[in-house]
Length: 181
Image (cartoon, rainbow, N blue to C red; front, top):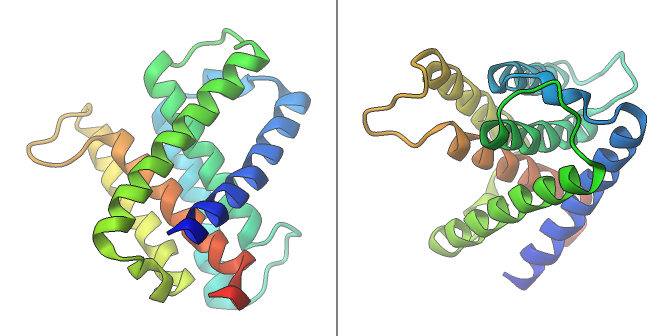
């Protein structure tokens, strides 16, 4: 499990680097997006990964790896939006980064708890299965959003975002450390 923690932290470091660079370029323009718009952005990225997996080629420079990073980052931003609400107001750079990291830390804790119970079964899975699971979580999230957040027995939107973060991290670990698995 120590190896998983180190690999998870490595992947989050890659995502954080992209997040910080985009913050320098765009500020917190994402603050205007409602969580449902974030869900649609995540869908676009996951759907593109699936198409790349099925066709075997991408015509645009960004590959599946960068799309998984995008999914992680959009999910973290969506969690912030759930907490703060969608507003036009800019967030101070330091606060945005702190909220971003806090949400990714919460997702990591969830992963560690589930990983304990499932015995790292994810290491035997295919990356394409993570893509499909993310797409399923997006469908579930959209249904919950369409129901104004009400569920009878299921977890909420936030839990689905965290699962999508973790599935994306697992895919990136498999991409980054394929020879070590």
